[in-house]
Structure formats: C-alpha cells, structure tokens
Length: 443
Ligand code: PMP
Image (cartoon, rainbow, N blue to C red):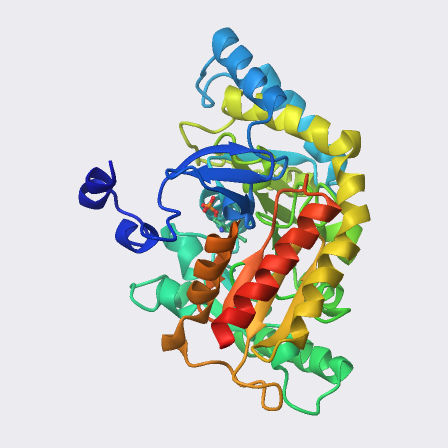
C-alpha cells in the first residue's frame, strides 16, 4: 500500500518523506488523543490532525450520529431544499456568535468559507452600487486557504509566491508578531505602529475601494501568533469607521480551541461582520465549514431595491445533513463541559510548554488556549531566525515521533494543538517528549 500511495497520491509532502523509520505516513486508527500508525505504534496526536480533532478520535456519539443521519437522509440539494440539522445548527451557531451575527452559509471547509465571505463582500458592495469597494486587506504570515482567492490572501511566501494570485485585489499589512517587533520598541508603541499602518493604507488607497479586512484572531499556520493587546479591537474600530467588513477567520480558533465556541468576542472583545469556521465544527469527522454573516447585511441588501439581490453562490455539499448532524452533537459535547474543561486546563498546557524556553534552541513559546507555537532561534541573545534549510521543525518532529508524539513542524517551529480532551498527565508527557526531542535536536 505504501508503493500505491507513492505512485498515485498527490500530497503537499511526498509520502516518501513521511514514511520511514519514524513513520507517520500511514495512520491506521485513532482513539482519544492517540493515533496508531501502520507499524502499531501509538502516538499522541499533538496537532489534533490539522487543528481539528477537537473532541478526540473514535468518539462513539459522533460516529453514531453520522450513521443515524445517513440512514435517515444522506443528502439533499441545498439549492432547492433544506434539512432539519442544518437549520437547527444555524440557530445554535447564531446563539454563540456575537449579537446580530445571525446568518450562516455552510461550505465544505475553511478555504470555501473564506472564498464565500470574500465573494459575499463583493456581491454586497455591487448590489449597493459601489462595485469599486472590493479590495481586501490581509496580513503577512496569514493563512486563509488553498483555493484561488483565499490563497491570494495568504502571507506565507511558499503558499502564493509561485502562483499568479489575485494580487491586484489584495493589500498586505505587517504580521502583528510581538516577538519580531523592532528591538527596544514597547508593545504599546508596536500596536500603535500596526494601527497606523492600517490607517495610512486606508487613507492612501481610499476607503471607497477597500471592501474587507480578513484576519485570524490568532494566526495559526503562520506560527501561532497572538497579536498585541488592543490590536484587534482597534483594527475592528477602523473597519467600522470606514465601512470595511471585518472578517474574522476562526477556522482554527473556534469550537473550543481557545475555550469558547467562537473566540472573537469572548477572548478578544470584537464583534466581526463575518466569521469563517470549519475544522473543529465537526471535530474533523465530516468536511464542513461556513461563514457567519451579520444579519444587518441582508437587510441592507433587501433595502437596496436591487431586483436581483440573490447571492448566486452555492456548493453541492453546502448544508450537508450528515455534516450538520455531527456538528450538532459536537456542539453538545463542547457545551456539556469540554469548553469549561479546556479553559481550566489551558494554563497548565501553556506553562508546561513555556518552560521549554530554557532550552538554547527555543526562542519563544507562545499561544493561547490549547494552541501553542515553539519558535527556534539561532541563539537567545540575537533571537535571529535559524536558516531555513535547517528545517529544524522536521528534525524535532522525527525525535518526537520516536518517543511517541506527533507534532506539526513548520520550518523553524513546532505547533501544538492537541485534542481538547487531553488531561494534565498527558500534557506533562507531551511536554517531556518535546523537551527531550528539542534537546536531542540542538545537540
Ligand atoms: N483558514 C485558516 C485560518 C486555516 O488554518 C485553514 C486551514 N489550515 C483554512 C482557512 C483553510 O481551511 P481548509 O483547509 O479546510 O480549506
């Protein structure tokens, strides 16, 4: 089967690189926070798949609900009909979103959610007679997906520098990374600098040409970057002032990763116009995503007297009954204690990982909730990034695998975002394995 995969599968990483002595190429089963590979080795799933298996693997309730829903109704067209799970889920999601953010459009994942939000912005402004208000402000370091427009918003060079992206529609601001702020600059001054950059951009380009700002509340794949305090509310206020739609990309931060269903309001005190979600909405059991949209925007459309105010955008698998049914059960589990447990255990997780900063290779460990990034540096004095060709993340990952832990390597970093069901002892084990592996890597 390895040879078949090698021959036919297209993957971001060649299968041959992930199969070997430290194999993680073939994962055969999962149970709770663990996965078992083809050779029968049990590993802690440190990144919860791709930041998504929030309630853990092999959850019987989720599995049962998928079976039951498939036996009742496995599919219906979202163009002409609807189904009960999608309506009930919409109501539940609206109950968790900030006041007034009460509409939802379901997609098949995060990229299609971002794509939908951006297309909706353009549709909205077209109908309202301002088609020029379509530029999108994004940031260096961002990750918003792999479809054309979503990928054009990405700010990690490898993701977009090889493609003819929609460059003319995107403006990139600086990555709000306190660790990499100019030496000697206070956090307050750094935040002022970032806000001023956005303000000056609006002034230069013209608010009548900028339709949306899109940002992850905590940048995930860009290296778990928690913005400085006050940054998000001030960005949000600038958007409101200039009628720029604020899109919070919560594909990673929602559904418990930061201890709440949505993090925008509860964690950062902001009320976006749109919130994109995916991944944890079904804990990865079914491909589902969506966009929460401020209901007022639909009122505006109705009042615009446009005779074709229908948003002509649709996906075959929007509102999928199985996805929505599993998402409802997933929400039950989160609400019935897992969110509270995540909030309670997050400090332990963060402090155990923070202790890794004593290792010479580790420049900074940062994070929030149950997501953390471990950034490696050349030395503690300069904090200079390591040269990219060292691929230190991959080397740490290999040591970790040998000791029973999967991590997500990101060039000079490792990212951890375990299933939310992880307990204190398992966090301790994870931290010990990381400590040993990083120590082995630096030797
Ligand atoms: N937005 C963010 C913040 C993400 O992290 C990702 C995926 N890692 C996406 C969008 C794209 O989601 P998907 O891979 O489900 O299309």
